[in-house]
Length: 75
Image (cartoon, rainbow, N blue to C red; front, side, top):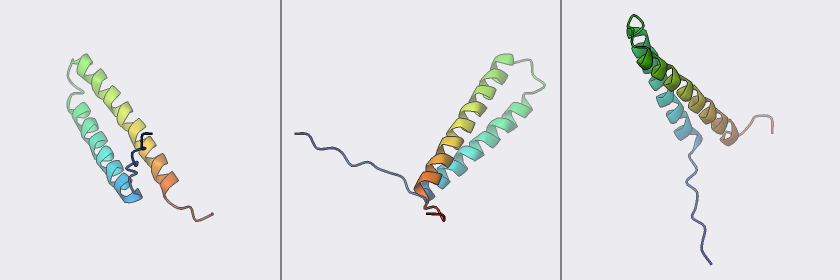
């Protein structure tokens, strides 16, 4: 019988740090996108918009994990 490997569950502080990194990445993408706003490079602009969306999704997911891991004051 195979043993299950223990899960490496991140702590709330590790998730908060990950969220901060994702937010910084989102800011950088926004900055690059604004620098290229005068450019006619529509493919790059579309790719940056996609990256922004994916970063927003990841930030949302990490925030939900933080909510689950952090003890609620109402329990």
